[in-house]
Image (tube, rainbow, N blue to C red; front, side, top):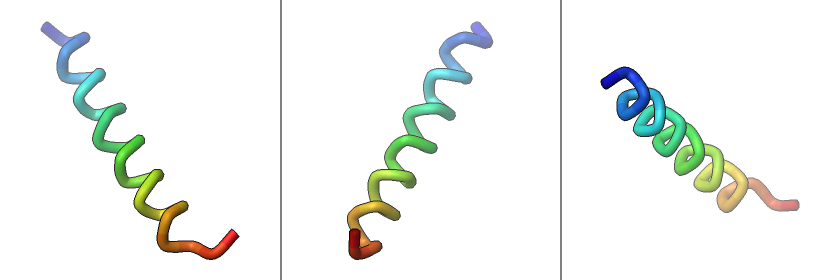
Length: 26
């Protein structure tokens, strides 16, 4: 029950992180 929620949150965080890295010039 709680595991699914955490996995979803982690996925969302990962996606937002990837978007940030994509926008920011390395």
